Image (tube, rainbow, N blue to C red):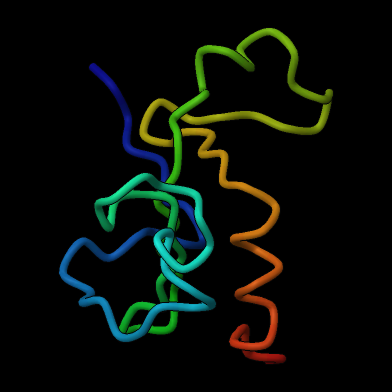
Length: 93
């Protein structure tokens, strides 16, 4: 029997998308013609959603000693340009 462990933070699956941070993938030239990934969004509860490539398995076994990925987490990679474009939209607190 698996024992549930309480964590200080849990993702809220009912949070809604509030606003895009930065520019769309089309504006940044990181997609061909559709508004597909990558993207960064602020949710209505203040958390952030990142849309990118799931490279969890590619990094498995190569994580720094102080990094772990839980079974319900993924390593998502986005282009540098996506995060840089979002910088001005990221709240300071």
